[in-house]
Length: 453
Ligand SMILES: Cc1cc2nc3c(=O)[nH]c(=O)nc-3n(C[C@H](O)[C@H](O)[C@H](O)COP(=O)(O)O)c2cc1C
Image (cartoon, rainbow, N blue to C red; front, side, top):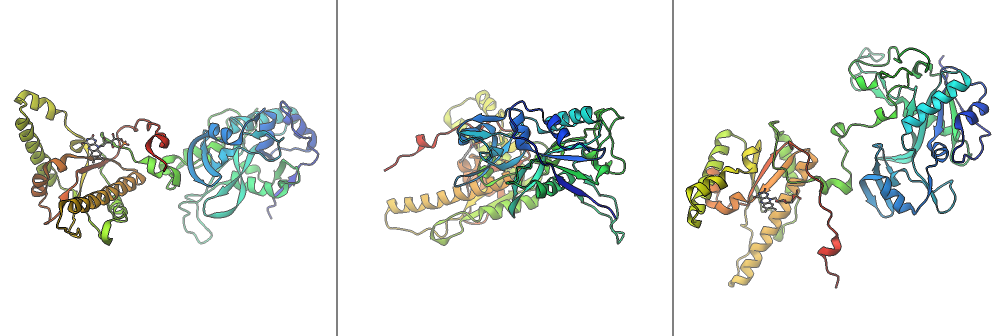
């Protein structure tokens, strides 16, 4: 029978800046042994490392935040520079003097490595160290402790390629063992008992080679299919740290929080050759169809230009119309060649979508004033639909550029695309994977854009 024990460490003093945690813990746990895992609440690491500051909580949260993921009322869920996503960017006002806040350790994996080494030096025991913090989980009520720093503990145990008891291959199971240990330790540490450290025994297979030993590698656990789970090349067997628990943005299906969905859309003018997923385009068009529109109408239509022949015809006919306009403006052939040579984003985009307005639900009035208002209503509804389309494309990881070209040669574009009767092209949207990341968005103060009456 396998047994795991989790014991709270009693008798630690209130931790002050500069406290020698290794000495305090080694004294409080005199029987520390090889294979033990020490689970330490990040707050005492922060206190020992002087991460308690006198500051306004909101200012501290802003300083610790690299990305606001969601905001509701007084609650901010933010990503820190460590990559962690948690409430208040990990800034904590509890268990600290009034007027002060506790910030997360600067480098929790580094803190774990230093503590592991110091305790190893003091006791000779080859232990693992986890540093934990408390987090809420999306979709789940309540908080649990998770590992934000790790040294000498395998953070993820990869079961992929192994078989279950029925012989089925386990395809996707990678157990976040460091988080599981952190949560178990929280059961004995508690919030009110002032027990900031626990010792977990019975999982020596998760503990790396000692600092003095050979290059760390956990036999039978690291998988060749997941090199990030390998112990790493450090000579101390500290392993990849809790950083390995942070899902890379490109693999994260829930990367965008409510607060940053809209900001994700940026005009992209240069694309890679990577083809566009047509299913993603259909989903984005479905999102466009949820925009508001007058008279309970659905005025949005989309020409998805998928074939090379349709694309060439559209772009060439529009170019000819543009050249004719420039000639009409009095430009000479050399000036025209220079202007049109600049090209445009549509030429570089792997896919073109032409949003069209079908205003057949518009009312007709006897006077031009109301007819113009009616047209404006449908145009703004079209803008709302296209914005939905562009935001939904961005959420799918696709860049877009809404350009005006078809608006300036509507009949030519309609003919080139053989559009159904009544469909009026409203520009064109180039779609593809961005070749370069967009520049930072300029800060716009809403106060400069509004009046209050
Ligand atoms: C109706 C409309 C027409 C546009 N036409 C063009 C265009 O012809 N060429 C272009 O490069 N960008 C065009 N844009 C994109 C704007 O230049 C772009 O939105 C602006 O630079 C702000 O950048 P952002 O979209 O990344 O916030 C157009 C945007 C709209 C809404």
